[in-house]
Image (cartoon, rainbow, N blue to C red):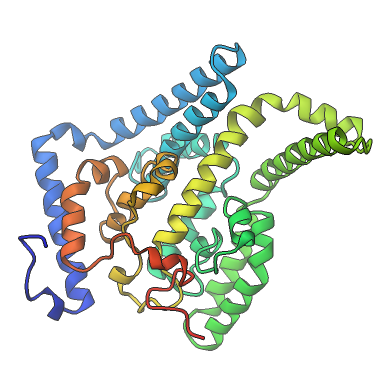
Length: 359
């Protein structure tokens, strides 16, 4: 039991709890920045981290190409650095770097996207993400539903966790049906539903689709080779496809495969730390949990420990990822004091419902 727990906090409304959480975490951040004034140099720090992550990717890729490091190590290093770039993208989506210098801002957005091409267009994702914050955990929280949040655990969910193209198509009909029902029930405006449906498709055209198709061909080629080795079937791709894969070997190994690892880890963590389906409207405390149980550490490594700090972000939106990490201990104490859940592993059985699945 934490010694500073407010014995009366259980009597507060969720709005009052959320207000106190925001106030106390913001106070801790103000104190942190007073102690370390360099943290106020937000643009410079963001750009430095952005450039450092890219440099790590370039050096690791060069070392792999020159056979200095093995393939697995290069993939691990690049996946970690790309996880950092995801955090930079997330901050950029909230306009936390170079808001008044639009050219630099958009150049950074392009950089984090082109090095993570399995993800959706970040300019379009900004709309989806802001909708997520406003309606987190609802049937029309399309950003989280697109990464399997709210689905029962199965082989299908596991295989589509990292895949926003085929995986997205497999869940599209149900998502659209739920959104139509939300419109009929008055929980979602028709124009908002129409816009979300339109931009969900536009967000993966053409870069995300192309990157996924290349990976589909890559893994299919590996599967065909294995079949030929075992059964001498003689099946193979046309020469043009083989030549294409050979010409794309460098980006496949240095960009796409690390991103596949990173994206699986991020989607696994985020889809299970967010709640879905029975979240009380506007109740931020029911939207997320802190997911930092020990066995998630290997996955946390490739999404910069997203499960440790993302709940903090739902309460204090306009703060950088590195400040969240530096100040996470105090912030987590505040979350726990007011009832935010920690390591609620029952979410895996409840298909991410906060209370439970209704039969």
